[in-house]
Amino acid sequence: APRVFSGIKPSGGLTLGNYLGAIKRFVQTQDAGTESIFCVVDLHAITVWQDPAELPGMTREVAAGYLASGIDPERSILFNQSQVAAHAELAWIFNCVARIGWMNRMTQFKDKAGKNAEKASLGLYAYPSLMAADILIYHATHVPVGEDQKQHVELTRDIAAKFNHDYKVDFFPLTEPVIEGPAMRIMNLRDGTKKMSKSGESDMERINMTDDADTIAKKFKKARTDPAPLPETPDELKDRPEAKNLVEIYAALSDSTAERVLAEHAGAGWGQFKPALADLAVDKLAPIADEMKRLMDDPAEIDRILARGAERAREIADPVLARTYEIVGLVR
Ligand code: AQP
Image (tube, rainbow, N blue to C red; front, side, top):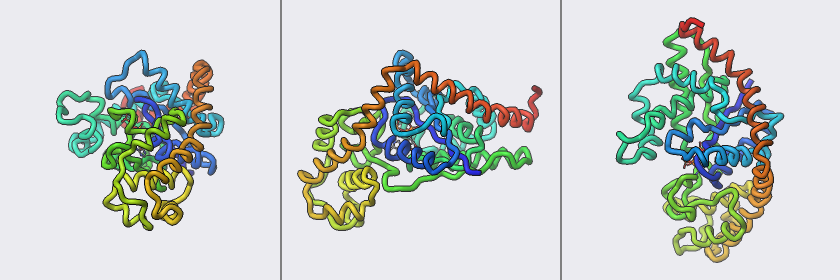
């Protein structure tokens, strides 16, 4: 049977990119009845420095974002990664399966480590190995992610295949990345060639899920665009990354397509389209933001939900880890 796993790092406030590229689709998967496991990947967050005074709050915010958007902790399993030790234990085994050359090809490491890769943490380098463990400890078959994570899911398949081959077993499944829909790569509002990130330098680059209506309107108003009006077809947006991004955000928020959005708005100038986009975003995000705030007022309740989710996750993960250790030949 198909089983879905996906995660979000508590490395900052959730963005519209996280919502459209991840959470919104997770809710659809859950509601379609697929067994789903959703994680707040706190061990991934600390691959770059996180202030210990802030990390618990960010972890609870990501949990609240899932819950407020419609993840039901009864139907799905919702927990934070560090509460299920099997993730880190399996990651070690995978560190011994994966090859250094594979890690050297990862574009996210290059982007995040920047010019001074020697100073990056070893954890940031081994990030894909932990991500493979997150997925494979549940024998997950499908991983809904944004475009930026595709390479890591492909590496997960390579690790599973090499493990199965080296130990002559058919144990780990070859997981499929699921990357579909109009919003798999939401771009930075100030530079349409960079993706929208939680940890980007300026708050004006991104829409946060908890931004209020005025902030959302202001950010779209100041979003970079070119002077031309909206064209008639998506093809004509090819060399207009900022314009393309705003049209795609509109399409994703309204469960439509870029074609249909342009059919309706062709010829409109930005003075018309941006306020319409801001209204739409406020319409969709404000109820979620209100619910997130309500949930975050009771951190103990969020912690209870995460602890219960972790218990259910361990029921699946622990036997898989035990079997893995047996396959590898570790005496228990
Ligand atoms: N801009 C985006 N467009 C579409 N999907 C996105 N995702 C992130 N940004 C966009 C998707 O959100 C999920 C969770 O991502 P993550 O938190 O694990 O890591 P990330 O991709 O590195 O996210 P950020 O926001 O860019 O965080 P920082 O700045 O801390 O690195 C993934 O499914 C991802 O594809």
